[in-house]
Image 1 (spheres, rainbow, N blue to C red):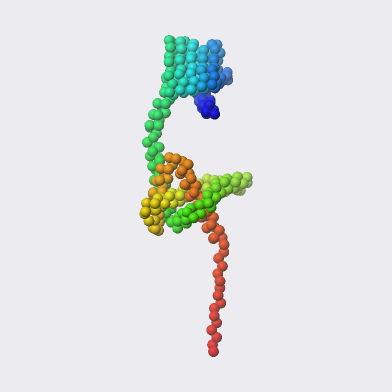
Image 2: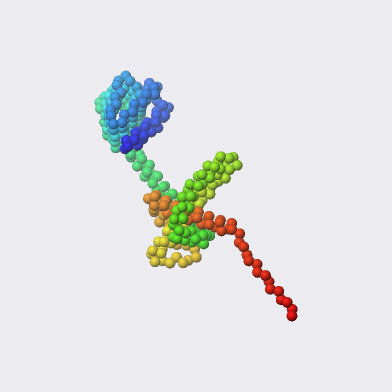
Length: 311
């Protein structure tokens, strides 16, 4: 089973390199559609033969002919009097022997590349590990800034919710504490029922816009509100555990603490997802009960007015 991801990754690399290689190919190389793949074994391309790609996983490649792209993963390769355009080696030692010409680049990750005699590499020997690390070094501060920006935006949204809908937030918190089973069932219904409803709506032209609105607007909005409610509930739970009261009219402190804690928990996505799922279920259950109560007409008892009779 461990080999399957390696095989798929190696084939994916070969395909990604194949199109640019075709566009920039040396006319003398040509293409005949031949691809050699070896997993856990050896492959040999004799002199005078051609292949568009050679992919080797956990094996050894002996190349003496012409090949456009060679991809090695946890393997090794010897080139002798060969001609190739691109070599990709991942944890694979490669020996570029006498008489071999590499028209393009040799790209390596944790691999040793050895040139022997008059072997030529017309491109460059590139360390993809260092290049990826360099890109990560450049993009790392950007991702951190974006992460902080999203956290601040979530805190602002939670504070706004605490200010405008404190009563509803408290009611949702009560449902989480008092009816966790119902909240979980509501969350599951909120995941699967909209999918069925949207599928039915998309069958008709009239219902398609409504389905699109549910899919792209209403559903994500409910999920985001659930995330905020869960964050506030978590923040207030932390305050109670710390011995701090939460009797205030609006849960501002809980909103800030809860969102920041959820942002930290996002390092382990399953934890933050469970918390957000609980909030999502609480929001849906509260909305359902609010709609049901408002749909039931209120009846008022009219008492007769006593009549005063003059004596």
